[in-house]
Length: 239
Image (cartoon, rainbow, N blue to C red; front, side, top):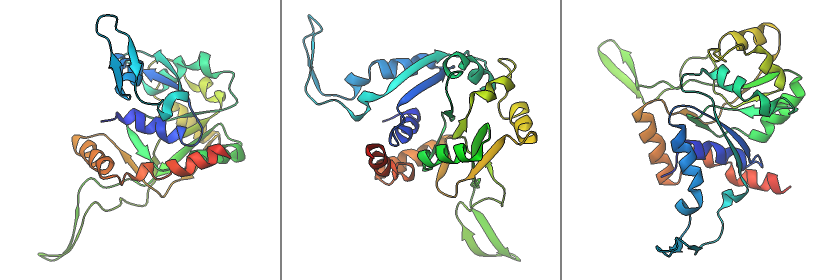
């Protein structure tokens, strides 16, 4: 009953990061509507239909301190182009964090920021192990000797999102059609400006209906791995 975007933002907010910029594109109006009506969707209230006066019956939600900027970045704009359109809001920052809107992770957000500072590089990316989409049959001739459900993929690391960047990266973005993960990242890597944090914990994209069902089941069970650090984050925020 929560959009995946909320889960991603909640993971950042748990570590004290509550100032968000959403690069909107396809169905961006639905995201605007969701947050414009957030109080009503997440509160009990009494409403007088004639005057439309609303009296809240429950206290403010935990997200009351979130500050969200909604920026339309185009329907067909690519990943680098969307970031480029956010340049007016990012140029004066010492550093900022960026992630995609389709995957959850239990990475320590505060540690990412510290690692980026220590690296001295323009960009830090979170590297994750790819998870195979299908079970694996371990065979001996015509006999299955072991059935491995959802085995971890090979020894490679892939881009898991959850970046930390300096505004320097904006100079690598040429147009709306720039794909962040291609020429800009390749150039940053060649120039020694791309650092990585190898995250061995939980990471799960939501690219298919099956993956959406998996994430919904985990959340409904109360065992969502990406939410396990939320309590730790609130402690860190208070300190």
